[in-house]
Image 1 (cartoon, rainbow, N blue to C red):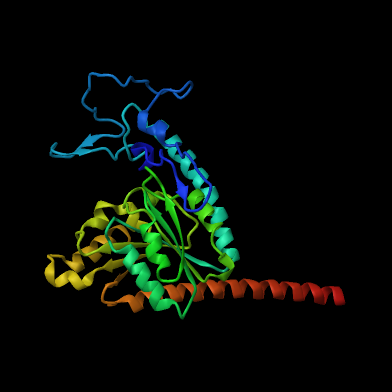
Image 2: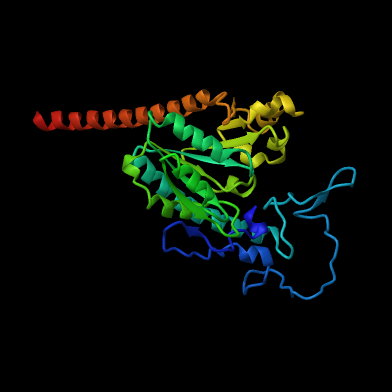
Length: 325
């Protein structure tokens, strides 16, 4: 994850905003420099004698000794020159700060009775095509806005705007995911009080976005049938954290060697409760089931708010009766 890949060390830009955040809080994890008091090993950037990894906290061979695994240890990751304890501390610092921003975003969205969905997938899964079809088909039912995440360009935001919906582009630079701080700035650019549904299209990546809460109510993973049915077990964190998997581009199944049942089994191996909808954003197959899923969650959110208001009203009525005696 980000404590080892060093993402987000570039500049983040929220389209139209005078914001230039360096977001270099991961750079230390990438280089593994020693800072006073952190107990890590320093290193130079010149030629060094590279030692083979030792079997230890973050590395272990397979039983047959043929493969290498760097997901062992407390951090479940590896960075040259950095201990597992240091990586865990960096991860806790980063995610703790992100979670505080996410809580602010969540309260803000709930305050506007606005359902929010975080769409995650690998590049090329069809997220933007699915989004444009969703907006066009649901425009009579609700007002939708989109926050677009990409490393560069506003191409996808322009595609969304061409449907008539509002969109804010976030360019993450070298970063491979959105975080709650970025999304908070994007919310400032939307008229939240007029919206019914906010969809966040995350950067195409099946790794780092899994770790970052954006303040959304629901996370949806999109997997296209052109990617391979074993993606959920290859990238378990992403699919274990999703409530729904949209199996997209099913119109291409006659031309592919893709086992749908094996794919669904892979998803349920890492997340037994995940719901799966087979769809095609191109032909429209299965899309109504997706719209129904969104509608059910909107209705459930509104019902929870009505119940809370009713409980509040009942409490006030009881207080009023006591004062009237």
